[in-house]
Length: 210
Image (tube, rainbow, N blue to C red; front, side):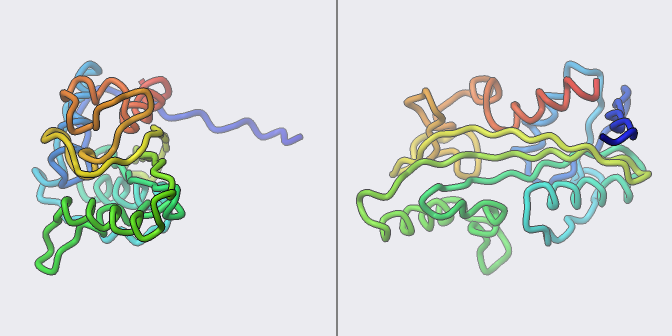
């Protein structure tokens, strides 16, 4: 047995925190979750920070990459989320490439197109293909000195077609969480916040760093 004690998780004090994303939906969700803890949030977009190329092959690697880039450039602690839809029958795809499936030729993102790609791949597998899926969120909290903490959240569910609902973002209109009959996009913001993959990861962060 090692005599080396595990490193204590670093606590986060009150002050300014960069939300390391240009995704307005993520900014809103994370800022809302942080609101009760006296944290002043500012997004990477507001600070005009560049979006680093997501070269990682795991959610952890990409979350760390984004958080460390924002912390280094801003001189402030930064919180990044890397999340995605993992479809059982597609071997976990789109997974870390969830956003890539929505990329268009002009550099914008078309989420209806992305949802259509998932549906077409499932249809190609035949009528008995499993529609089980899960959303995964990995949060990385980084400080300018290079210290990083990680927190993961998951939620199981299944996919439907056609898409339903106009709330939420990304693949929300085709994902029905376990125990529900509605998609994330049919739920109010508060309902989705109560128990989605990001809020589950955030609950672990809160327990550890506040």
